[in-house]
Image 1 (spheres, rainbow, N blue to C red):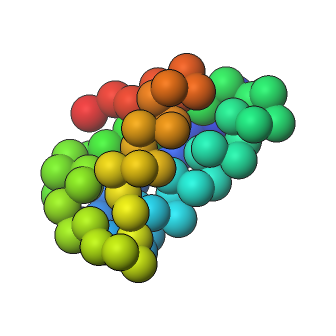
Image 2 (cartoon, rainbow, N blue to C red):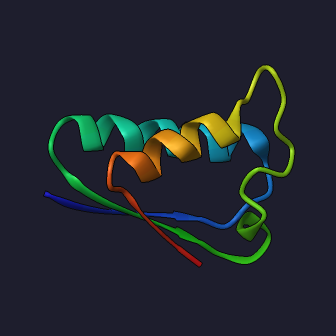
Length: 69
């Protein structure tokens, strides 16, 4: 299945959850694209121990997920 996730917020929690969902879908064999819109273009902004955005983004791209902005 092809999945498109649109992130248009700067909320670290929402970006983290969207990346986690994308990674789960990739694990299930889906083709996933995440489109970053507006303030979400700064994907790792707001990263913390609670929301490790860079780690999830790295896993997403290494798993052949597509990031678009």
